[in-house]
Length: 241
Length: 375
Image (cartoon, rainbow over all chains, first blue to last red; front, side, top):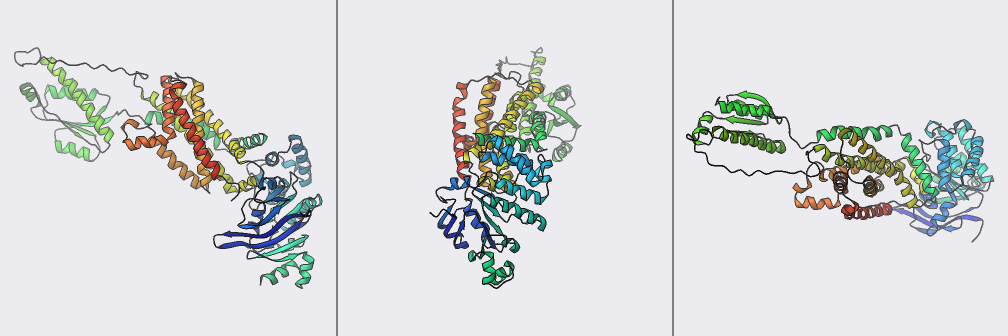
């Protein structure tokens, strides 16, 4: 096994009845990179991410995540990944700290470790005054940043982000990406789906999906040259035609 | 183990933070005990009666007085016209018409036999049948009086020497035939069932609706840890509810608590194992709280109506009695009545307890299989 390839996907197929959501996907993600998974709504991004996180079973294909086989070692994979779903995933009726304590707790983190790490997180996100506020009282941008921070709180090898910046203003999106860079610098591999093409420029490598297939996969710079486009948005439009 | 504690902690915070929860836990038992125990009685009182007295004799007047004095009847009308009294029944203003015909007293004295007509509105079968038997009783009692009354005039009436057999009833465990004593344990069962079933049925579905279940499913948490962690808070709340209800029952109705209280709570725990399992199963089968609610209601209604709380199981058709073999509510009502009212011991109820436990194992297994972390 090549150690640098932290995610390996070979001939991944997922069918829902007659509908083919993922049509023979092949790609590899290198450890430490920010891998962008682009595509229009309904292209099959979320389906793929659910398979990689063990929420959904593939119809066929060979897949390994963090060095573990997706069929046989699902629970080991789960120990090594973090996930932030499209749907908001914190408990509205719990406070910031209670959410952190709960999620960190079920990953088996020690009490003191949780307390210490929470303190530094509150400072980092600048929400010290809101440690005991209910999640439902916070603005959406804060919630998203917090959800991301909780997804990587247990220090996973890979974090999967499914359209993490949906519905958030550009400034907050910018701040969110700073958090992603931070995580990446600390050695966490980031697998992110999005349909904001400007965000694609922030990624080390991107793959573009269309109708269940991967139609392009490379560094953003190379794709732009290849398609003779000023930005990824143009690349995407040209491919999707 | 620590994982389970984290889930229990989280559930308790969420339940106590829910502003509706405290009123539900404390107000529901009070209301149910106060209203249901009084209202759901099988004693029939206040039957509306119309008396048609065309005889206007001493005997007819005395019979009228007997009815007026009875706590079971309210004499709503007196008339001389049968047609008018029938109207009253048709319009639902009275339940029973007592028709004393002309020459009633004469017939009684001459023929030693006289007829009274009783018209009963039998739309409500219970009121109808019980009402008419009360009528018979009053008239029969009065009839015996007539005999004794006239027995001095032996020359005029040849009275046979009537030998009456006196049947003396002895009511065990509830000597005063106090209906409330019988009802309270049943209401307590309903209370525990509602709390247990709804808390568990709604909870997992709620996480599905919000989407947090996905977040849980990507963690390395084990199925059984998650389920145990979720069920323990509900078990504790339901047992607390039972304790609260028992206290109220003791204070308000002075219900006897003859058996061992530990045994009461042990059986309640076994019973809740089944009910929480049912709730969990429902929530693994439904996708929305609305669906879960309807399914939970369906089961509760069937279980409670069949349980023998409001109508005796003995008078149900055989197939219905057999159906009660899968009705946990019926089992627990029976157990609770036995332990509370009769002081039954563990050896008396152990078969039922084992049965319920086995039932719980089956239901929980289904629920655990149905709850999948991966789809």
